[in-house]
Image 1: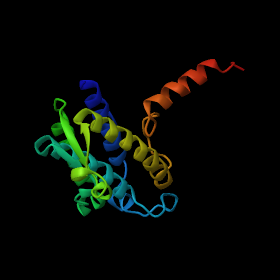
Image 2: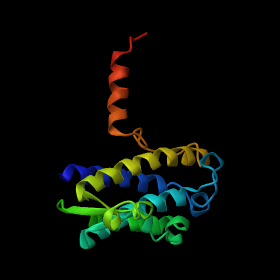
Image 3: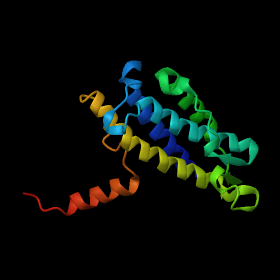
Image 4: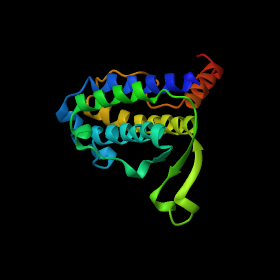
Length: 173
């Protein structure tokens, strides 16, 4: 199961490399194609999802609606890069059962919880991070068209595999 943590570390590393190529002004600039959102807001969002999950190691429950929404993470690149380092360091943990809490389901379920596991939630957060990387890629390239990033930035493993398969089957011209 260390593979899921390696994947999360790799994705966060790609994000850190991309963030290191822009300045705080770019990080906080509203991007029209992202409905006015900023790189900082998307970064804060994914970091705080992982922070919520890391907290579940001691609490046995995770509520992604209960994020801090730390403005320092969305306004300061270095704060985000440091927060990512802490998450990378703290996330590696053996699997355990946990309860997923969400504000909108509290009235529908006894105790307002859905049973899950730590590894399942790590996988969810990896998928969530990839989804936001795809959005971040659009924003980053709009801000800085010369930006260098991994060719796989913002693509799920299944998409990467599919694209390789399709490319391999295309007739050469």
